[in-house]
Length: 268
Image 1: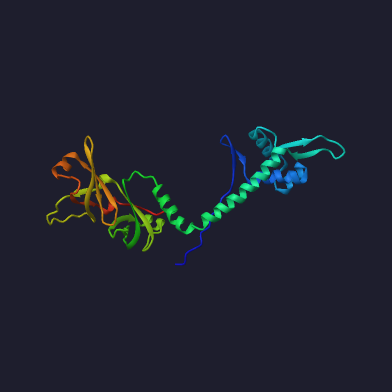
Image 2: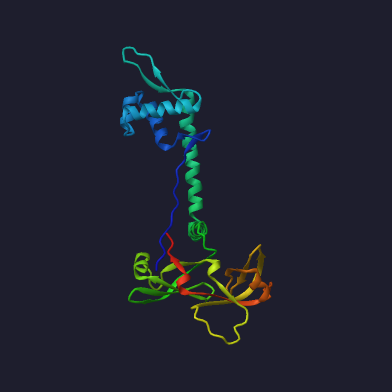
């Protein structure tokens, strides 16, 4: 599939003490006042109501700590509105900042292709869930059933995770071969087997790895396994089970869990 060009955009906003002084819109209003000498004409020029214009001016004057806009005394021309020296300076400086900001975005945009992948990764890492184990992969196979679908997810390390989900969930997520999805498995749903000795198990998912971390608590122990390809999987077992299995860093064990224990999702 052809890559779509990615561009970066952004706006400059000014704040005072955490309060919003304004951005390009309010600066345009100030510039229009300087050009028109009339709040009425300036408001029309920037497509703003007269009241909204004065509300914005009052807010800017208050936040700036000194007037940016002032009224002129009435006379033959009926008076008017103009920028103070501070107001003119603010408009000029904002224009300079906008130019520098645009140049910065152009420079950053030249690296956008590489940045885009990292932004997607950051979004995935920002996902919050109670499930200890989170795996991202692509749907390798989907078997439709009368009520439930069996979905096989291929992980980057070559492992496969099988999940059983309702057809309604499968349809709403848009699952199908090639679709990117993530699997969530609670650590408490995982059973560890140190030596199967040829035994067979009904659990569809069996991921073998080496123990890299053992954290013992008052009642339970958290065991983390390193999987081929760089992934990890964590299991919570009782302290007694950990002791009887002689779980230690370097031990080779297999993490097993039912397909019905897997929750599937798709990136937003």
